[in-house]
Each structure stands twice: as C-alpha cells, then as structure tokens.
Length: 215
Image 1: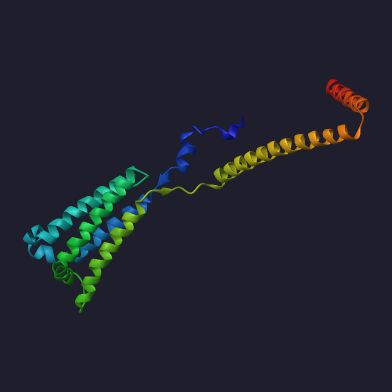
Image 2: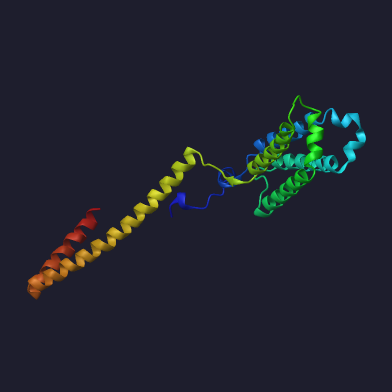
C-alpha cells in the first residue's frame, strides 16, 4: 500500500484542513462597534445616569456583553461559531439587535447627536447603521471556513492524486495488453497448423523460463 494513501494521524497536519474562522477580525469589529457606541453617548449618559437603564441603552449594554462573549469564543476557538446551529443562533441575535435599533431608532439618534459635531440628524442615523454593519462583519468573520492549504500540503495531495491516476492507468494498460496478447495468439492459431502452433508456444515458454533464470 502506498504510504501517502494512509490516513493522516498527525494532529498538526489534520488541523490544516479543519474549518477555521477569522477570529481576530471578529474581535476587532465587535470592539469597534462597542467603542463607537461609547464615544457617541459619552455626553448623553453622564448628563443623566438614569438613562443608562432605559430600554434602548439597557438592551444595548446587554448586547455588548454578548459581543464581548463572542470575542472570547473567537479567541479561544479557531472554529468561531463552530456548527451551523451556532451560526444560526448568532444571526438570530443579530436580527433581534437590528429590530431593537429600528424600534428605538429615534432614541439612539437623540443620544448620538450629543456626542458628535453634526448639523444633520441623518448623520446620527448613519452611525446606527455603521454600528450594525460593524457587528455584521464581525459575525461573518466568525463563520468557520475551510482553511487554505499551504503549498507543501497541496504538493503532497497532488502527488497522491498523480500516483493514484498512474496506478489506474497501469492497471488499464495491463488489462488491454492481456487482451491484445490473447487476440494475437488466436490469430496465430488460425494461421498455423496445430504442430507449428504447439512448437511456437513451446519455444516461447522456453524463452520465458530462461529469462526468469537469468533474473
């Protein structure tokens, strides 16, 4: 059996083909979303700390805890959200977050306008969208994808494929050669007398035996 065709039991090489997420990207974008929100409400919340416990900002704070937990998961696990179920849960949470932002849109605009030098309300509204976009990019980066193999692993797999293909060709060639030989023998049998044919077969057999002895 070809050694290259055996199952690879080396954990270092096995991990190369396991799905991986871009956890570093997730951490960066989740952190950016949290920092952006904190900067925009830096004047609004301190003016009245009771606002922190209003529905929009209380849920925002809870979602930030979820984002921080997501960062921890991506740091500790290369596969990010791991399974399709994990990916589905993350996107469901994101949809709930978008619904919250849409429901409390005006409250966020009023708060964000206090933390930015802007004359237009649309600018604060755009910040709500930017924050959601940062989170979405982070979520997408946390989806496990098949890891790109390096050039050495690619060469090894290519070599294995070539060897398997060559073995297949050799087998097919042997079968075809046997058929051609049988066909040639049948034609000789038809064109020669029985004595001549037996004499030829005997000579060929002697030649084969002598070759075997010399080897």
